[in-house]
Length: 462
Ligand code: ZN
Image (cartoon, rainbow, N blue to C red; front, side, top):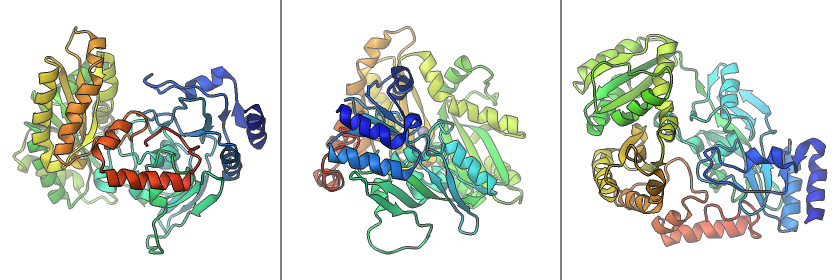
């Protein structure tokens, strides 16, 4: 093993590795503290060629390796649990090319999502992927986990924003699929299998990403609605009124808003009318043609809201988004919580929320539902906080059986037990429980073909 480590160190040079436990520590622990691993060696290559040589050695010597981006994942996929080599992509930060005519750009895997957004902006274009952790999450991680976020409704998940991909295979061969074509029907769409594969089939080193016209007019509104059903009706009305320009449509419950206002300094409810549910919606257009009036009129004509506020400054807009984006942090500050990242068909959301909330409250009387999320995608963060003053540890000890209750119902509704966070180690059992045996067989066959020695992120997903 020490011989293998020496060979790997030699590839990247003195600046490209660390075996100092203090430097390694933040890389082997998940940010919420839910997962902790260990590694004898952190590699920090800067080129695809270095990664190619690293994987060739790992494959030759059957040495397991875990790729990692910004370490913001929530399901343990980026943690080396069994002393695997840790491969950090965070020094691969070049923007290789921006192409305004073709509306795309090619960036390396270690560019942060915020960095990619800024690079698009520099080219007078727009890259729409947006998630709470975008300051440190990387493009490689976003693509490997098929990240979602708040703009999926309009622009799709991470995988839908990819035109081309560069991947290093387990044996070190570089699979160059960095094409920028919109039309390319030349056989299997190989890049697709690496998107959302959590680093189990290859290491994504660069991507050609779709760009869009930069939003010039941004209209952000916060509205009170009676129920999730009326929120869905409001979404349909707003899409019709704006011709499909709604770019975000987030559902917030009264319970969640109260937690945010209580725990996050500088936040307040922009509305005076109390309500059980709220919606944060945003519509954008690449040109100024009076979108604000359209949204305002459509909101008041909808007959579905009891109160609404439209942001009239960038500060007000940021304040509204802070309410939504602080939801997880507020839940954390309130104490023990059980979380489920699920999706059901949009039309089924009201029935699902009612049934699943009832089922969880039957299992844990007094638990406080904090259901929020990307209503337009059918993706809910179906979360619960422990009853005030109750035993947090006892609440958390129910994690597995509550997840079973929720995920079984999700399955009954034709939904997904993992909408945007992935499988990692957290949801491996669910994968086997809810996917068909044939799907699992095909996934395993792909894994065996592309990584016969099982060196790439072993034990994750499958
Ligand atoms: Zn989310």
